[in-house]
Image (cartoon, rainbow, N blue to C red; front, side, top):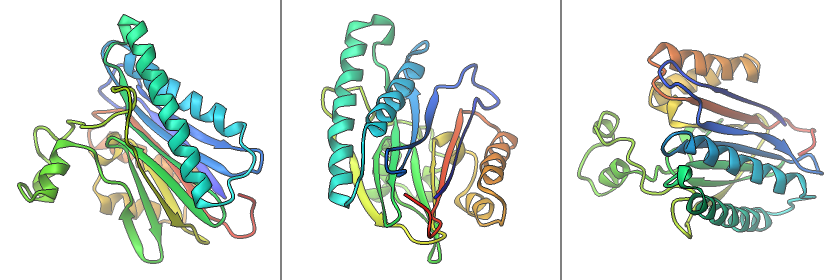
Length: 248
């Protein structure tokens, strides 16, 4: 598999509260992570960095994820433990009170991808069938879209667009969305924070990912375009592409 991770502070924010990375286990399988922190002072940075570090630590101790059931159980157990760790840390450190982070992460093997998701960071798949969003935002406006109160188009410009209903570390327990898809030759997975999707349309993202450029160029161009169109938030992308015959 080929992969790339990139993050940028953007044009407005004073610091980057996004975190994440691409990590490999003992078998060469990939864990891709994007976390977008939130909270007063630097608490968001603490939450996203801590979540990423703990996931990386657990993943690098892992040998082989052979089936989707194992992958889903791995995510469920470890994310629940990390949520509890973040919540306890916030209670014990007043400067971190109320901190939390979105999380989208993917276990990528040469047969399947398992995705876990909390908040409004997203995961997309580009393959021969087109480009589609695999995650569903845990936001107020998305609930309004689902109930038919507003249209998907109206949601893009809603004043409460960024009101998140669910985040890692804000409650004692959390229910994350977990799903598994097949991962075939040349399929491309994109994980990103809302700093990308708030600035670029799905068509713009698809156009960049569909080019013949190397993955690092695609990541660079996505971030560059988001900055050119405002860069109002931190921007983070992780891209993983399946390549037949390679480990993972």
